[in-house]
Length: 239
Image 1: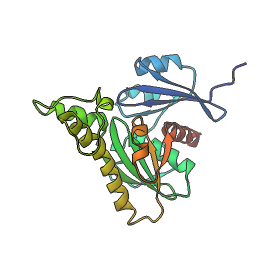
Image 2: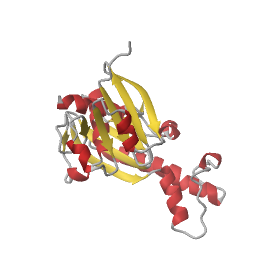
Image 3: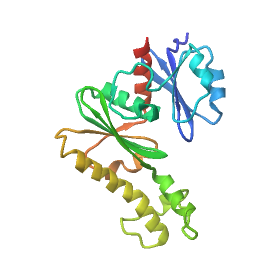
C-alpha cells in the first residue's frame, strides 16, 4: 500500500514548474512539468500544496485552504531584515529557510546560479540580511547579442566554446565575459563579506551550479533540494 503524501512542494521558476512529493519527511518523485501550473494543481487537487513562485499567481489560490502560497505575509521561521519584503522573491525566502534548517549555527551565504544569479546572506540565528541579484549565465550571453548588431548569441553552444579567461575568438571572449565574469563577481562578494565574518558557510545551488563548482573557493555544493527543504519547513511552521 502506498504511503500517504504529506504535501506537494511546487517551485514555480522563470523557466519551469517543479514538483516534489513529501512522504514521512522524505523528498521523492521530483518532476519538472512542461504543462502550466493549472495542470499541476489539477493533478494534485486532493493533496495539501505548498507553492513558491517567482511569477505572478492567480489571486484565487490564496483563497484555497488546501494551498499555502509562500510570501513575506505568512509565518516564517526566519526574520527578514529587508526594506521591501513584498518584493523579495519566494525562492530566495525558501532557500534561506532551507539553508538555516541544515546549518542553523552558521552565517550562511547562498549562491543560487539559475536564470538569474542571486547571492544572499543569512546570519546565524536566522536573519535574512539581503543580497545581490545579477544576470545568470545564459542571460548574459543572450543580452549581449540582443543589445548589439554584430555579436552572436552563444547561449545554446557555449559548452563547445569554453576557454580560459582571455578568449582567442569573439565567441570565446563572449564566453569568458559571461562565465569568468560570474566567477570573479562571486569571489569578490566573498572577499568583501569575509572582512566582516570570520566564519562564513558558502552554499552553492541552482540549475547552473555544477558548471561553476570546481572554480569557486571554499563552498558546499548543496544540489537542488535547498528550496524544497525550505518550503517543507515553512509548510510545517504553519501547522
